[in-house]
Image (cartoon, rainbow, N blue to C red; front, side):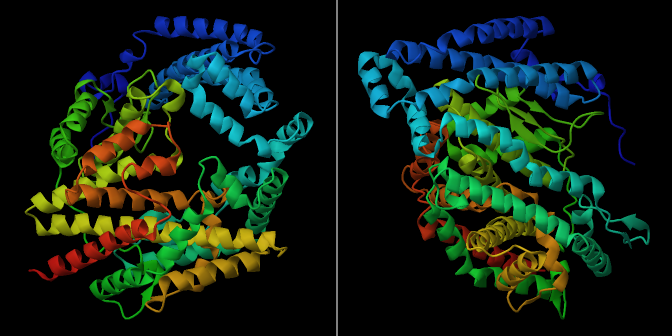
Length: 601
């Protein structure tokens, strides 16, 4: 019988994160709230004078950072307390107050960028000479002026701003429709119980040991989606149309270029990923052959893809054991990293166990003036150790970024956000494989690694290929009917599953359940992030010269450089197919290790 969850106040403080390091009491929170409110009320005084000279511009930017820092600190206190116990109304109200004041400040500061872009960058360069302290904001200002050719007139920007809610309408309708309106039907589970299939529980039943359960879940979900194909196609088609129109209005050739622009990513990176992965599908097919053989199937269908090769690992771990395993696994990153990692445990960055009202899942969160806190729901499984390593990867990246950069240069981009977390996961897996004496545990670790490579490198790239193709069709004047979208998705699936897997007709509707297609060229970042992490880990494990110090430099770079330049600190060039190939090679090696170990008795 599962242990009854404790209420928040019943949980031992040793197992909770220490949020008193943000504010010792609610009174301290209120003091900062009053202070920042005054700062915000005073901020408009900068509006008409900040471009008169370099000192005025510096004062505006510095004050903006000070206010933003306090707002983020207030936000973290409210947000983390709310997530610790969502039944606590006090912190819900606190969170709403902070959200409101942040929105208020965003409106008040909306004049800054349009005003800056009325001038040429040469004006800013003159200010650097006149007032050298302003050079502290050089990278921030360069990023603003990169946008100049893509910023419209004040009147046009106002029109677009007013239209923005309607431009976002397809995504909002999709979220509402798929989360609240869809019904798919019922199946019988492994015990013969009637259960309703939902998007949430589908992942449970598609991994069932019972093939009939897998098949029934697969056909029930996707036949359900097929009933809504015209409606959901209209949503996606209009979202694509809106993104294509906005790209043209802002003088971009394509919506992809517009999406990649803020990270200063060339489309070569996107194309390199897709082309390299699609030139190495043979490794993926090898994995499918392995699964088909181990599962002992005459025909390998799409509903068999997620069936695990191994039973769930039964070993249980205390948090203390998990902590020691993670510390030993990451000790390869050197004393500096290990000493900083100790702070996460000794200074109580981590909220460990589930309790009544605590949000599910796991994350790392924090701000420039707080610790990088980690939320867990630790259950003692091997997967929980991996989650701990993953979230600490995020936290250490944030810690290094904030300790080594000014406020304005401290926030790394989403493009590199999953690199540090995945490096930790890969190093942990390597450590466990080296030190485990249990064959089944090793096979379970390898099984998880194989699925990580399959779902992140290949599946996310398949999504990326599909996304590019339907955007290209729309740009070329083709009407994105449900048949066009479904047929495009089906053909790409056939390419990625080859002759080994029976590509069931129902898969043509799978795209309907992927919300990321409304994020405008986002999914490729999952695959590039893992590929970069694999390349970094290869260098570290092979003890290449400066591999660890290069990686620490990357963590310290924060947001002081563009993402591709930060990765180059670790000898990762995302335009080079060798980076993607190194990840695929690790996938291939894991397949061979699994095959060899599986044959042992």
